[in-house]
Image (tube, rainbow, N blue to C red; front, side, top):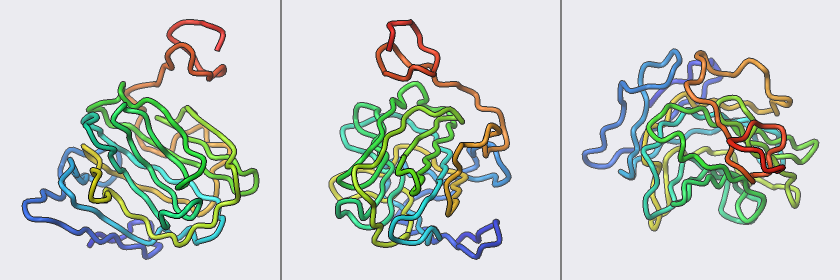
Amino acid sequence: TVADSSGHGRTLNLTEIAGYPGFHTDAAPGSWPYSLLFANTGGEAGALSGIGGGNPSFTMAFWIKWQGAGSQRQWIADMGSAATYQGFHWLVNPSGMTQIGFYGGTNLAYDLSPYVNTWTELLTNYDANTGVLSTYVNGIQVAAAAVSQTPALAHDFLRIGGAPAAEASLNGWIDEVRVWNYSLNPYPPTPTRTATPTQTPIPACGNGFVALPEECDDGN
């Protein structure tokens, strides 16, 4: 059991399997000197997120050090139920593309392949007032979309690293999980972390992000 250093009384309970290594000293920049290594081992951590059910605004941030894709979809975290728009998940597909969004609804995709074996901040923001879901990598917005219907989260229990039986937990480390029960919108110009990111995402051609620099200019 890990105490919540924010003072909000949210404790995190880590469940383990035989041989699961638990805490590691390879950690993201921040005050806590340890991280959790999942590496498809089946362990998971969980705590009430405090954002509430229904249609709440929220922002969640994770530091991850991803070791790369495999044959199965990998789970960073999820909350709520698996019914349409009653839950939310953070996934990485075998292609290396994220699947961040509501069950059965709006999801955001971004290629994490350039960040293999690099500590990376992944932040998701949902603004219930505007209905816009957005994702940031190392403080830069990389994807955004309006939800297709009003969410109704079944509950706000946040499971970190857990995965269904036919899929896998994240192949890598997770650290510095932070939750806000409101929307950080616009995202603050000073990132929420305590260190300068080691890598800035440079989108490839044709990804549609006009506002971001590209490796070449194809008009998209």
